[in-house]
Length: 534
Image (cartoon, rainbow, N blue to C red; front, side, top):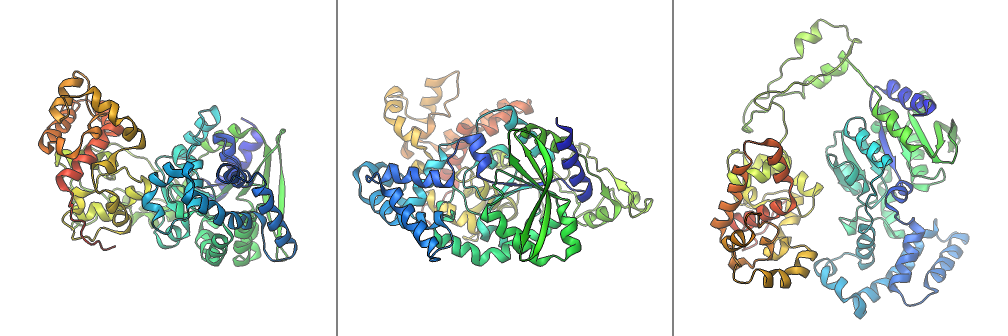
């Protein structure tokens, strides 16, 4: 590990008393996923969709002239605007995009832009390549990264930090309660919600109108936490505009303090550490610049950093430290335990290390997706449905689109299920809703393979001694006996009950989860599609 990089990271953590936020740009996605830059993305979309080999050059020339004549502020959003109409027309009408229209029929009949859907599909093909660097970054994220801010649309951050909760777009960040702990803020949208992507001039205009509110929301984060910029150019307008807004809000002494916590990483062949000064409206914001190609040292420095807490902070935290009963009872009192006696014997500035021990009653353990999948089948955790929906299920549906069972907890709530579940439920209209594109493509051959065994018990017999869970989604709805499916799922959980490691693996298995979701739909789903209230 480069000691110069280590010193910079550790000094920032020591000064703030908090682990850093990472502000991640497209350069990091190019480094680890091979995604194209913004201009490359637009150019490739033009080449793939439009037959005109000069289309992108034409759009770029128009945009350059508009910027030169002060008719537009930036070329690339205008290029996206100019090409959107032609790209949408071809995606809607050309024979070669028939499959695209079939896959996205529901979105295309709504307000979503076909070009944004195409962009989302294109970026989704890029995945994180395993490497020593990505492994070290993921390890740092488990314990020593407070959160992520990114203007990227891709899912690299979710792949590297699967435990983090994701907020998409400005509205999520502005109108949700954040903890600033293990959260990802995708301020320019996500490929998982194509309509949220900030791409065209109109998108950027709308983003700019809300940016002051966004910057105010981020102000606490910038003042309280170290922030490490990764994958951005020094001239990136997104970064400059946010920093400019923050500079407007802070007095000079706060700016000076802020400079000790901002670290800008710039790619370079040789490692050098220095100072970077940026001017905004006559005011100067300084930060530390690390020029390097040794990103492993950055991640290692974060991973081995340490922070402590003052008793003043712990006293503030005390009101939020409570015990959760193993069986959720929303009406029960919150109990604070184990802190007061320690605090009374220490001075306000005494540093404290917080430790955890295992409780036989799982005190304080939040409800995980695995708990919910298990409860759908066994109905043994006695969770309050409204509590689960309000405090967990909407969050998990937002974090993990198209992957959670919902009907067991929503069926008795008269449609009052929250906005994320309300948007999710209409997509679950039949067993086919749970099939992936791969499953649909392989269904004819799978059904021929198991001809004569197309039922739950039939597949169980044909696949023995292996499990049939991978093939159950190929059954038609009338071929699935719900009681047989319930018995199969229960037996699988009973078989691993004594081995928690095997149980954990089973509850994370994608085929097993899909079968639980199908069971949840068939057992608890209301096919009448009642009106929903957010």
